[in-house]
Length: 290
Length: 290
Image (tube, rainbow over all chains, first blue to last red; front, side, top):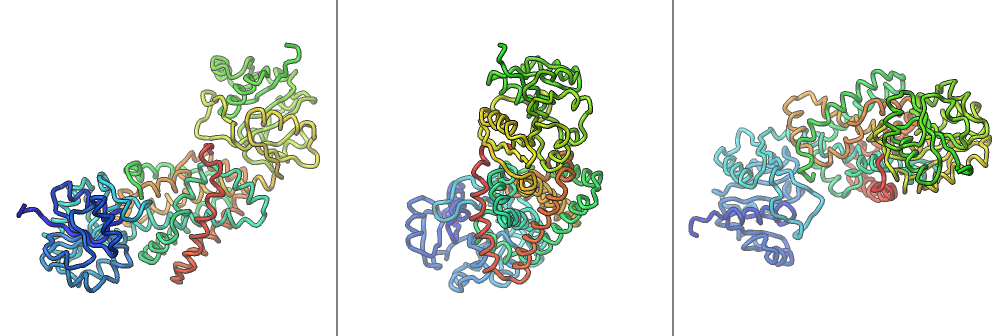
């Protein structure tokens, strides 16, 4: 076992726990690092990792460290964690916003690779991790000119071995794309619930609740999700979200304008275009949870 | 069979065909009226009705006539159809917008009852009709002061016998509620597809298409639907749709404003509220197709 590669996984929630399971299946020795002893015990009981500790020193001999932490903790990392990262290890993260992470970590570790495996967010915590979570899902790396090429290759090898679809983009492009397809929809959808729920006539409001069916249910789903997640998206990716919302508002105004002017030909053309646009965004939708 | 009640169903698409099947199952003799002989033949072959004709005179001895026609044809009805309606029959429609229908038909027949069974719209045509379509779904009547009370009772009896959830509202309330939960979502959703599809940077656009997952798929579903249906909603219910869109825009601006001002507490409260609002709109979502 002397040649077995050693991975450290920091945080054992949905992403970290799933990584622990899959990395073990690929033959890695996996060391977990968590905050609380209770989580450590549960992670061991679930077999998410072979070793677990609450002491960052446990990362000492790792070849690879994956920071599976919430964005807020990634942007303001524990100094003890940084001090414990072996300088020769490849270090990567799983954060859903990349420009600020890259900005923060560029100077914290010489072999840091900013990356984002796109996996579901409905479940959370030490009981959420499952095998095969990354299979068929995109894993985007956002290197910059300073990123260590050999470190990037290691992360790519791991992502591909886990069954992910490897993609490389700039951090800015990643953040804008994620704003458009993941963050903006939350606010678009929440505003619909807000508009229907704020209807002033109580009889209309009650009728709307009675009549709402699958169309409303689908359009309002992500707007009725975890508020903390929505705030994290907006605060972590604020500029891209605002840019996406501005583009969205402009799009909606074009449709509204056609209705206002009773320009049914134009409205029909717009809706024919959105109908034809949708399939291009659906190639992976069945296989994913985000 | 002398006492068997006779129903005329005008139009044998999803709603009309399903009504034909269910009314026969309840013991009604059902007479269909369609435009084309080909549709008539197919309706008979499918057993949607016992009798079918392309001549409005076939409605002569009907006790009940259900106008299962598209809104446009309901608002501009064939004079031969109006002339053929027995003055003693109860006449109702199934249109998804009620104020203009009531306005048009108030003076066309003394026993007209404006009503709207809420049933799925994904399928259409003479092959779409199925048994039990109305079971567990709302059927809203929108009578006004001139509506014949005994005619309203007949429609209620039929709707309840078909398993519908009977609801009475004013036409204006109905149209505003339907705008909020069915029509506005189409434009809200279409604008999202348009914003993502119009992203100017081709690399970001391609990345967005690659990364889009179930959240985007759900939020964009009704915006990627049949363009003709979207135009019919907007043109048939224009005032209520514009009012709903204005309320929607205001709601979105409140959320956007919180992001702009980095007021994360307010944004969190807003999203907690939309999360708590959603269940009230979902009571029937599983059972419905609209």
